[in-house]
Length: 365
Image (cartoon, rainbow, N blue to C red; front, side):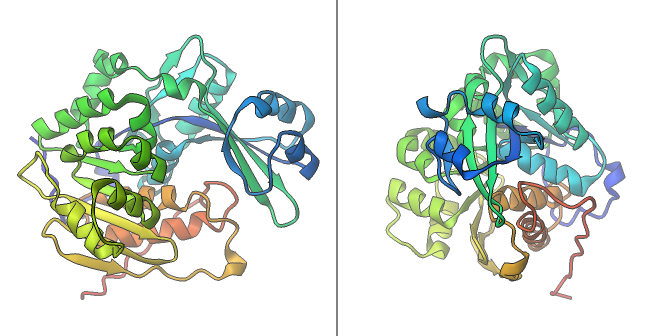
């Protein structure tokens, strides 16, 4: 049996066990290049777009690779972004493990290499027929506007058989914390339910990110089936507004929404749910295990220092989890989430500086 002990985060990170945190997500290879506006127009895209690739974008990636030289690759997808960033804080490799599905191709090899360079233990299912999922990141103009075109491909093909392999079962047994996203719920709810039930039976923490409003709009029944297993739930105010509409919560006040989500039915009676609602540059709303509401203001970043806000949510989760799995209290976890998100938005892409400089100021002392 495993139980999180808040305040137990005094040990050196070098003593943290490998495989402490296990995640299920949709791995995508981010492919970034500076392009001209005509390239966007050719593929029916606009500056600052964020779309799923369709019939008009089928040859976009190949054309991009052939035409532009300054190509940059990084391991992406929401879960893997957060895990790369958590590892940035944790320093010791392989504290976090990530699974998902990629193709048997060069993009898949590059994605695995980039994830391993970041310290993440990637244990990915390989689909021999589908291409590795990717996201073309098209940067235009002197103000560096980014247009995103995602191709999920193999990421949509994850099968529950993968987590039943002996080597994956061993990693799941070893983990004390689990994390996944609404994006992955759409792909393999049975996998999430099996891992969540393992967490329940062993009193481990299962964390979940709502990810996007459409998950609540079109997959409400799946969210409803998973929710009783969820010990900690993340989302932004737009996602929790969609949650409230889907589940009949008649309030737009995020404090009240957090309170009601915290009180919803839960299978593990040994701990109450924690709800984390981010609100952009505004304060984070937290409903803790006691049902008490706390607000944590975010430090304002001058507009002149902000490169883009894309990826701030993944950064917040990565920073938060890096402290949470060490047993630190919620105020420190949120503070690290804020710090990390502030570093991400100063970069182009979901990136961080070479070294973290997070310093926790305990204002209660």
